[in-house]
Picture 1: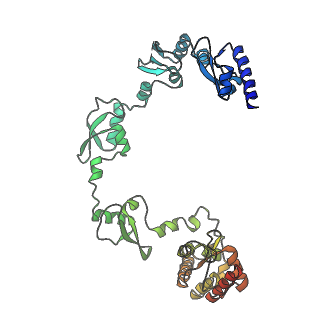
Picture 2 (picture 1 turned 180 degrees about the horizontal axis):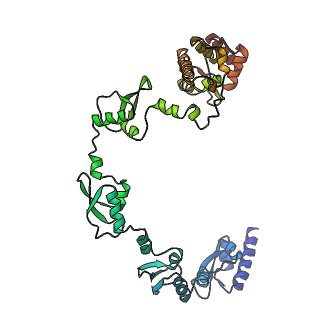
Picture 3 (picture 1 turned 90 degrees about the vertical axis):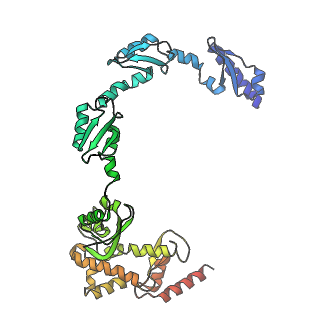
Length: 397
């Protein structure tokens, strides 16, 4: 069956090739012997070429013939480039749109290009000239950064031309306009000898209203201890590099984007109870990490809740309010209905109490719900969890 199909293909190709006035060089036996892959064809003008049944079916002809038909004549190329104010100087090597030709632009710049490139772009020398700064502009840029050009201005050609310049501290060195812009107008020598000594570093901390606690300085990436006057309950550390980049006290940073300063602020309509649940995320993360971020009963890592082992979130919040002498009804209020200072006290004590009672355990969400359906929400104990664990292990045996 396969040979019959190949024979039909061969006859079809022969008819099509005859119609295109080409000559089929591959015999019928050769085509059938090679399982009908490709045949050799020749046209009257060019070298023989290989073609396939699919290409012949799509009426694909000799590539060289097609290129010649599509190629523009020299007179057509000349006219089109003339419309772009480009004069052809040397046309001897022209074969097609990608052949190299020598041309001259309207500004008398001589350069080598191709027809395709000439039609798609402008003279590179003209483009560079338009982008190039004038000598007066260049001098003004250096002076505005407190630099003097000592020499090299007369030889200026483009952004890579070299100058000798001097900063306001008398440092002389060679650079180019491109390198100068890349350094943001800073003296390369001043940058290397910048006085990052202990006194200088402490001064930078004081400028940011931070109290430095360090007595030695190593480099800009070494952590340095400090205290924020507004959050002096704990020492923090930061690198000089981070400080110079605008980073400071972490707690001040959080306050700047918390509450009414947050882009999602909706007038403080969240209930205090919901608000406090969001503030124990650090305790939840520590609990997850302690148990490898997986359910302690199933080992699964998805859809996890953190279960309080020795108490409940509700019991902790009630204890916090009692200690601060605040009514339990406060938990139902919106955070906009309570003083910011008092809210911060509630938040802080709630987190402290969570750590005081110990870390929780990760449980798969449906198991966590099953536990509280069985034992209720409140006055939960560690013994209840042990009992629940034993019942679960028996149920899967």
